[in-house]
Length: 353
Image (cartoon, rainbow, N blue to C red):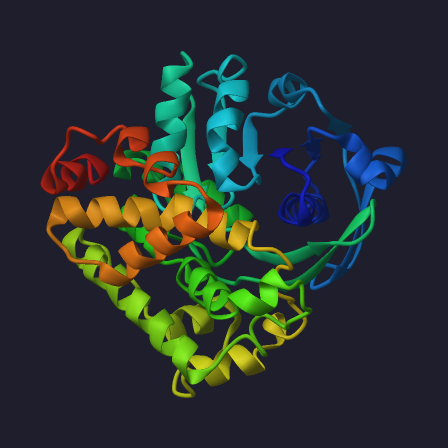
Protein backbone atom coordinates (compact mmCIF):
# COMPACT_ATOMS: atom_id res chain seq x y z
CA UNK A 1 0.00 0.00 0.00
CA UNK A 2 1.27 3.47 -0.85
CA UNK A 3 0.54 6.54 1.26
CA UNK A 4 1.15 9.98 -0.25
CA UNK A 5 1.59 12.53 2.52
CA UNK A 6 3.24 12.21 5.93
CA UNK A 7 1.28 14.70 7.97
CA UNK A 8 -0.74 13.48 10.94
CA UNK A 9 -3.45 11.87 8.81
CA UNK A 10 -0.94 10.16 6.53
CA UNK A 11 1.04 8.80 9.47
CA UNK A 12 -2.13 7.59 11.22
CA UNK A 13 -3.28 5.89 8.02
CA UNK A 14 0.13 4.29 7.48
CA UNK A 15 0.15 2.99 11.06
CA UNK A 16 -3.38 1.62 10.63
CA UNK A 17 -2.53 -0.17 7.38
CA UNK A 18 0.69 -1.55 8.87
CA UNK A 19 -1.22 -2.77 11.94
CA UNK A 20 -3.37 -4.81 9.55
CA UNK A 21 -0.22 -6.47 8.15
CA UNK A 22 -0.03 -4.44 4.93
CA UNK A 23 3.41 -3.43 3.71
CA UNK A 24 3.33 0.36 3.55
CA UNK A 25 5.47 2.68 1.44
CA UNK A 26 5.31 6.33 2.50
CA UNK A 27 5.95 9.38 0.31
CA UNK A 28 6.79 12.79 1.74
CA UNK A 29 8.26 15.86 0.10
CA UNK A 30 10.55 16.36 3.11
CA UNK A 31 11.71 13.18 4.91
CA UNK A 32 13.50 15.39 7.46
CA UNK A 33 10.11 16.27 9.00
CA UNK A 34 9.73 12.62 10.02
CA UNK A 35 13.42 11.90 10.52
CA UNK A 36 12.69 9.38 13.28
CA UNK A 37 10.33 7.35 11.07
CA UNK A 38 12.86 7.45 8.24
CA UNK A 39 15.70 6.38 10.53
CA UNK A 40 13.86 3.64 12.44
CA UNK A 41 11.59 2.36 9.67
CA UNK A 42 8.71 2.46 12.15
CA UNK A 43 5.86 4.78 13.12
CA UNK A 44 5.14 5.24 16.81
CA UNK A 45 1.39 5.68 17.36
CA UNK A 46 -0.29 6.70 20.60
CA UNK A 47 -3.94 6.94 21.55
CA UNK A 48 -6.66 5.09 19.67
CA UNK A 49 -3.94 3.32 17.68
CA UNK A 50 -1.19 2.23 20.05
CA UNK A 51 2.17 0.71 19.22
CA UNK A 52 5.09 0.86 16.80
CA UNK A 53 4.41 -0.17 13.23
CA UNK A 54 6.90 -0.94 10.45
CA UNK A 55 6.96 0.88 7.11
CA UNK A 56 8.56 -0.63 4.03
CA UNK A 57 10.14 2.63 2.92
CA UNK A 58 10.05 6.40 3.31
CA UNK A 59 10.92 8.33 0.16
CA UNK A 60 10.66 11.69 -1.56
CA UNK A 61 10.36 9.94 -4.96
CA UNK A 62 6.66 9.51 -5.70
CA UNK A 63 7.41 7.23 -8.64
CA UNK A 64 9.06 4.70 -6.33
CA UNK A 65 5.87 4.40 -4.28
CA UNK A 66 3.66 4.02 -7.36
CA UNK A 67 5.89 1.33 -8.88
CA UNK A 68 5.73 -0.70 -5.67
CA UNK A 69 2.00 -0.31 -4.96
CA UNK A 70 -1.20 -0.95 -6.91
CA UNK A 71 -3.27 0.99 -4.34
CA UNK A 72 -2.15 4.55 -3.58
CA UNK A 73 -3.79 6.56 -0.78
CA UNK A 74 -3.53 10.34 -1.08
CA UNK A 75 -3.51 11.75 2.47
CA UNK A 76 -2.47 15.32 1.67
CA UNK A 77 -4.61 18.41 2.16
CA UNK A 78 -7.15 18.71 -0.62
CA UNK A 79 -5.76 22.05 -1.78
CA UNK A 80 -2.65 20.12 -2.91
CA UNK A 81 -4.60 17.73 -5.16
CA UNK A 82 -3.78 19.41 -8.46
CA UNK A 83 -0.05 19.23 -7.81
CA UNK A 84 -0.22 15.66 -6.52
CA UNK A 85 -2.25 14.57 -9.56
CA UNK A 86 0.33 16.07 -11.91
CA UNK A 87 3.14 14.25 -10.08
CA UNK A 88 1.28 10.94 -10.09
CA UNK A 89 0.00 11.10 -13.66
CA UNK A 90 3.12 9.89 -15.46
CA UNK A 91 3.47 6.90 -13.14
CA UNK A 92 -0.10 5.56 -13.05
CA UNK A 93 -1.58 2.81 -15.20
CA UNK A 94 -4.76 0.76 -15.34
CA UNK A 95 -3.48 -1.50 -12.54
CA UNK A 96 -3.62 1.36 -10.04
CA UNK A 97 -6.39 2.59 -7.79
CA UNK A 98 -6.06 6.02 -6.17
CA UNK A 99 -7.94 6.52 -2.88
CA UNK A 100 -8.37 10.11 -1.73
CA UNK A 101 -8.32 9.95 2.05
CA UNK A 102 -10.17 13.24 2.55
CA UNK A 103 -11.91 14.06 -0.67
CA UNK A 104 -14.11 16.92 0.60
CA UNK A 105 -16.78 17.74 -2.02
CA UNK A 106 -16.25 16.00 -5.39
CA UNK A 107 -12.55 15.50 -4.85
CA UNK A 108 -12.41 12.52 -7.20
CA UNK A 109 -13.92 14.68 -9.98
CA UNK A 110 -11.18 17.28 -9.51
CA UNK A 111 -8.47 14.63 -9.26
CA UNK A 112 -9.71 12.64 -12.28
CA UNK A 113 -9.92 15.80 -14.37
CA UNK A 114 -6.40 16.82 -13.32
CA UNK A 115 -5.03 13.37 -14.16
CA UNK A 116 -6.67 13.47 -17.58
CA UNK A 117 -5.22 16.92 -18.21
CA UNK A 118 -1.78 15.48 -17.46
CA UNK A 119 -2.31 12.55 -19.85
CA UNK A 120 -3.41 9.82 -17.41
CA UNK A 121 -6.91 8.38 -17.77
CA UNK A 122 -6.56 4.72 -16.78
CA UNK A 123 -6.51 4.63 -12.97
CA UNK A 124 -9.72 4.58 -10.96
CA UNK A 125 -10.07 7.32 -8.34
CA UNK A 126 -12.11 6.77 -5.16
CA UNK A 127 -12.72 9.24 -2.36
CA UNK A 128 -13.68 8.88 1.28
CA UNK A 129 -13.39 10.99 4.43
CA UNK A 130 -10.31 11.07 6.62
CA UNK A 131 -10.94 8.57 9.40
CA UNK A 132 -8.56 9.80 12.09
CA UNK A 133 -8.55 12.77 14.42
CA UNK A 134 -4.76 12.93 14.72
CA UNK A 135 -1.89 15.26 15.49
CA UNK A 136 1.87 14.83 14.87
CA UNK A 137 3.90 13.54 17.81
CA UNK A 138 7.54 14.49 17.33
CA UNK A 139 9.47 13.32 14.26
CA UNK A 140 8.73 9.64 14.64
CA UNK A 141 5.11 9.36 15.47
CA UNK A 142 1.49 10.43 15.64
CA UNK A 143 -1.11 10.82 18.36
CA UNK A 144 -4.54 9.53 17.31
CA UNK A 145 -7.37 11.10 19.31
CA UNK A 146 -10.16 9.19 17.60
CA UNK A 147 -11.15 6.87 14.78
CA UNK A 148 -14.36 7.31 12.78
CA UNK A 149 -16.31 4.10 12.78
CA UNK A 150 -18.41 5.20 9.78
CA UNK A 151 -18.01 7.23 6.62
CA UNK A 152 -19.07 7.11 2.99
CA UNK A 153 -16.96 6.38 -0.06
CA UNK A 154 -17.59 7.02 -3.74
CA UNK A 155 -16.04 6.99 -7.16
CA UNK A 156 -16.85 9.58 -9.78
CA UNK A 157 -19.60 7.30 -11.14
CA UNK A 158 -21.67 4.48 -9.69
CA UNK A 159 -19.76 1.94 -11.78
CA UNK A 160 -16.44 2.95 -10.22
CA UNK A 161 -17.94 2.88 -6.72
CA UNK A 162 -19.31 -0.64 -7.24
CA UNK A 163 -15.99 -1.87 -8.61
CA UNK A 164 -14.14 -1.08 -5.37
CA UNK A 165 -16.85 -1.53 -2.73
CA UNK A 166 -15.72 -4.95 -1.49
CA UNK A 167 -12.09 -3.87 -1.17
CA UNK A 168 -12.90 -0.73 0.84
CA UNK A 169 -15.35 -2.49 3.15
CA UNK A 170 -12.72 -5.13 3.90
CA UNK A 171 -10.04 -2.50 4.47
CA UNK A 172 -12.18 -0.21 6.63
CA UNK A 173 -15.07 -2.02 8.35
CA UNK A 174 -18.03 0.32 8.77
CA UNK A 175 -17.60 2.37 5.59
CA UNK A 176 -20.51 2.41 3.17
CA UNK A 177 -20.98 3.38 -0.48
CA UNK A 178 -22.61 6.76 -1.07
CA UNK A 179 -25.57 7.20 -3.40
CA UNK A 180 -23.28 9.44 -5.44
CA UNK A 181 -20.13 11.52 -5.07
CA UNK A 182 -22.05 14.64 -3.99
CA UNK A 183 -23.69 12.78 -1.11
CA UNK A 184 -20.27 11.55 -0.01
CA UNK A 185 -18.84 15.06 0.08
CA UNK A 186 -21.77 16.60 1.93
CA UNK A 187 -21.73 13.94 4.68
CA UNK A 188 -18.70 15.65 6.23
CA UNK A 189 -19.19 17.15 9.67
CA UNK A 190 -15.83 18.93 9.59
CA UNK A 191 -16.84 20.85 6.47
CA UNK A 192 -19.94 22.08 8.31
CA UNK A 193 -18.20 22.86 11.60
CA UNK A 194 -14.69 24.14 10.94
CA UNK A 195 -15.37 27.46 9.20
CA UNK A 196 -18.21 28.67 11.50
CA UNK A 197 -16.29 27.82 14.68
CA UNK A 198 -13.10 29.40 13.36
CA UNK A 199 -14.87 32.59 12.32
CA UNK A 200 -16.70 32.79 15.65
CA UNK A 201 -13.31 32.77 17.40
CA UNK A 202 -11.46 34.93 14.90
CA UNK A 203 -10.01 37.42 17.40
CA UNK A 204 -8.68 34.76 19.79
CA UNK A 205 -7.16 32.76 16.94
CA UNK A 206 -5.64 35.85 15.37
CA UNK A 207 -3.97 36.66 18.70
CA UNK A 208 -2.55 33.14 18.87
CA UNK A 209 -4.43 32.21 22.04
CA UNK A 210 -4.60 28.58 23.10
CA UNK A 211 -8.26 27.62 22.72
CA UNK A 212 -9.85 24.17 22.95
CA UNK A 213 -11.57 24.30 19.59
CA UNK A 214 -14.67 22.20 20.23
CA UNK A 215 -15.10 22.90 23.95
CA UNK A 216 -14.20 26.55 24.51
CA UNK A 217 -14.80 27.72 20.97
CA UNK A 218 -18.50 26.87 20.96
CA UNK A 219 -21.58 28.75 22.13
CA UNK A 220 -25.29 28.65 21.39
CA UNK A 221 -24.79 31.35 18.74
CA UNK A 222 -22.01 29.37 17.07
CA UNK A 223 -24.37 26.41 16.79
CA UNK A 224 -27.01 28.65 15.16
CA UNK A 225 -24.51 29.49 12.41
CA UNK A 226 -23.38 25.87 12.10
CA UNK A 227 -26.94 24.59 11.78
CA UNK A 228 -27.83 27.25 9.20
CA UNK A 229 -24.89 26.08 7.10
CA UNK A 230 -25.93 22.45 7.62
CA UNK A 231 -29.43 23.27 6.35
CA UNK A 232 -27.89 24.50 3.09
CA UNK A 233 -25.91 21.24 2.77
CA UNK A 234 -29.24 19.41 3.07
CA UNK A 235 -30.96 21.61 0.49
CA UNK A 236 -28.22 21.10 -2.09
CA UNK A 237 -28.13 17.41 -1.28
CA UNK A 238 -31.84 17.05 -2.02
CA UNK A 239 -31.30 18.70 -5.41
CA UNK A 240 -28.75 16.00 -6.30
CA UNK A 241 -30.50 12.95 -4.81
CA UNK A 242 -28.21 12.97 -1.78
CA UNK A 243 -29.46 12.17 1.72
CA UNK A 244 -27.23 14.11 4.13
CA UNK A 245 -27.42 13.21 7.86
CA UNK A 246 -27.88 16.17 10.25
CA UNK A 247 -24.91 17.12 12.49
CA UNK A 248 -25.99 15.21 15.62
CA UNK A 249 -26.58 12.06 13.59
CA UNK A 250 -23.21 12.41 11.84
CA UNK A 251 -21.43 12.68 15.18
CA UNK A 252 -23.22 9.57 16.41
CA UNK A 253 -22.29 7.67 13.25
CA UNK A 254 -18.67 8.79 13.53
CA UNK A 255 -17.90 8.23 17.18
CA UNK A 256 -21.08 7.29 19.00
CA UNK A 257 -23.04 9.83 21.01
CA UNK A 258 -26.49 11.00 22.03
CA UNK A 259 -28.51 12.35 19.16
CA UNK A 260 -31.04 13.88 21.55
CA UNK A 261 -28.55 15.97 23.53
CA UNK A 262 -28.12 18.71 20.94
CA UNK A 263 -25.04 19.48 18.86
CA UNK A 264 -23.49 21.83 21.42
CA UNK A 265 -23.61 19.39 24.32
CA UNK A 266 -22.52 16.47 22.12
CA UNK A 267 -19.45 18.30 20.82
CA UNK A 268 -18.42 19.62 24.22
CA UNK A 269 -18.58 16.19 25.87
CA UNK A 270 -17.38 13.87 23.11
CA UNK A 271 -13.98 12.42 24.17
CA UNK A 272 -12.40 12.65 20.72
CA UNK A 273 -12.80 16.45 20.74
CA UNK A 274 -11.64 17.18 24.30
CA UNK A 275 -7.96 17.83 23.61
CA UNK A 276 -8.08 19.36 20.14
CA UNK A 277 -6.89 22.97 20.11
CA UNK A 278 -7.90 25.68 17.67
CA UNK A 279 -5.37 26.79 15.07
CA UNK A 280 -3.18 29.66 16.21
CA UNK A 281 -3.39 31.38 12.83
CA UNK A 282 -6.16 32.13 10.36
CA UNK A 283 -3.84 30.78 7.66
CA UNK A 284 -4.89 27.20 8.44
CA UNK A 285 -6.49 24.32 6.62
CA UNK A 286 -9.68 24.62 8.74
CA UNK A 287 -10.45 27.70 6.68
CA UNK A 288 -8.49 27.15 3.46
CA UNK A 289 -9.40 23.54 2.84
CA UNK A 290 -13.06 23.52 3.84
CA UNK A 291 -13.81 26.78 2.03
CA UNK A 292 -11.82 26.04 -1.13
CA UNK A 293 -12.72 22.35 -1.43
CA UNK A 294 -16.26 22.15 0.00
CA UNK A 295 -18.00 25.52 0.25
CA UNK A 296 -16.90 26.80 -3.17
CA UNK A 297 -18.11 23.72 -5.10
CA UNK A 298 -21.23 23.64 -2.89
CA UNK A 299 -22.03 27.20 -3.94
CA UNK A 300 -21.50 26.41 -7.62
CA UNK A 301 -23.55 23.21 -7.51
CA UNK A 302 -26.30 25.12 -5.68
CA UNK A 303 -26.37 27.78 -8.36
CA UNK A 304 -26.72 25.14 -11.13
CA UNK A 305 -29.62 23.57 -9.23
CA UNK A 306 -31.31 26.88 -8.40
CA UNK A 307 -30.85 26.44 -4.63
CA UNK A 308 -30.12 29.59 -2.56
CA UNK A 309 -27.17 29.23 -0.13
CA UNK A 310 -26.69 32.67 1.48
CA UNK A 311 -24.73 31.43 4.52
CA UNK A 312 -22.33 29.44 2.34
CA UNK A 313 -21.82 32.41 0.04
CA UNK A 314 -21.25 34.76 2.98
CA UNK A 315 -18.59 32.50 4.51
CA UNK A 316 -16.79 32.16 1.17
CA UNK A 317 -16.79 35.95 0.76
CA UNK A 318 -15.72 36.64 4.34
CA UNK A 319 -12.86 34.13 4.29
CA UNK A 320 -11.71 35.36 0.87
CA UNK A 321 -11.40 38.88 2.29
CA UNK A 322 -9.51 37.64 5.36
CA UNK A 323 -7.14 35.51 3.29
CA UNK A 324 -6.59 38.08 0.55
CA UNK A 325 -7.47 35.36 -1.94
CA UNK A 326 -10.54 35.03 -4.14
CA UNK A 327 -11.55 31.45 -3.38
CA UNK A 328 -14.28 31.61 -6.01
CA UNK A 329 -11.46 31.69 -8.56
CA UNK A 330 -8.80 29.60 -6.83
CA UNK A 331 -11.05 27.03 -5.15
CA UNK A 332 -12.67 23.88 -6.50
CA UNK A 333 -14.78 25.38 -9.27
CA UNK A 334 -17.00 23.46 -11.67
CA UNK A 335 -14.33 24.00 -14.32
CA UNK A 336 -11.83 22.11 -12.15
CA UNK A 337 -14.39 19.32 -11.75
CA UNK A 338 -14.84 19.08 -15.52
CA UNK A 339 -18.50 20.12 -15.20
CA UNK A 340 -18.38 23.73 -16.35
CA UNK A 341 -20.68 23.12 -19.34
CA UNK A 342 -23.16 20.87 -17.53
CA UNK A 343 -26.52 21.74 -16.02
CA UNK A 344 -27.48 20.48 -12.59
CA UNK A 345 -29.51 17.68 -14.17
CA UNK A 346 -26.64 16.67 -16.43
CA UNK A 347 -24.24 16.56 -13.48
CA UNK A 348 -26.61 14.26 -11.61
CA UNK A 349 -26.98 11.99 -14.66
CA UNK A 350 -23.21 11.75 -15.04
CA UNK A 351 -22.43 10.83 -11.44
CA UNK A 352 -25.22 8.24 -11.28
CA UNK A 353 -24.08 6.42 -14.41
